Length: 354
View 1 (cartoon, rainbow, N blue to C red):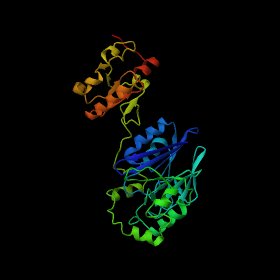
View 2 (view 1 turned 30 degrees about the vertical axis):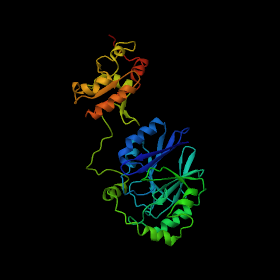
View 3 (view 1 turned 180 degrees about the vertical axis):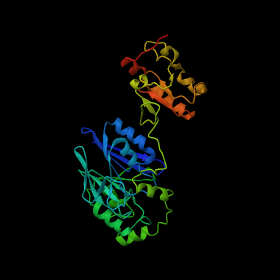
């Protein structure tokens, strides 16, 4: 099984990917709008396709990328039936199961932070995704957006802390750099909800947190109630349209050798190898400009900012670094040749030699 925990620095949100590698299917839980291309790249690199995006609740601190991932992959959008969300493909209820390949997660309703909070338990109870209900040594807040401290107390005690003691718990947020906990740890060590804490103690604690409301509350909640679908007046691009590109987890765009060979629009090909390699056995792509990587930052003004750039090296490693340098210099239309000259020549595309 594939399990990945991804992080959004701005909102301190964890996004999770659960996948069945053999079946090529996955779930993605609590995806964040600004990271949808990163997440899509990871799914492709892991060779799994999402069958659904899932939300543990209607978030108030970030906008979901569920709509964008559905547009990209055709996956379902699944949310709690109690969340009041419009536009979802599947409304989840307590005891529902969501399958991915031969595996599944089991839905447990855990209201308290919001009416529509759910916890997702893996089929073998080895892990659970607790959303904003139970955090690591803490809990979600209950002072806005249908918050109910008594409901949260019962949700945590009845639906989460009844799981096996060694069940790993993964929250939707952490603000201190912690990544996971376990049922046993939280029953012993969570100051808000440990076994020795009574319901009235919990309610009193939650009534006196005095926290400021999330900064994005008025933007995030309306957007998440429509599964992240943008306002019709807002047009957000899927990605660059000057070539058939693929976004990578490394954070850059790549073009396949065949895509570059078939490209008919103008492009600047920049070979960042040493001069001896440029003239060596692998040759170089016809029309390429030689600018060794160590000279690129100083010679970037030799390149047009209006014409896209494809960077090339032997294997694609140095040229990936070159894309990052070009992006920092303000050249946004830049992509790396995947596999470099090794793949270009292996696929029998034309080369020049000097």
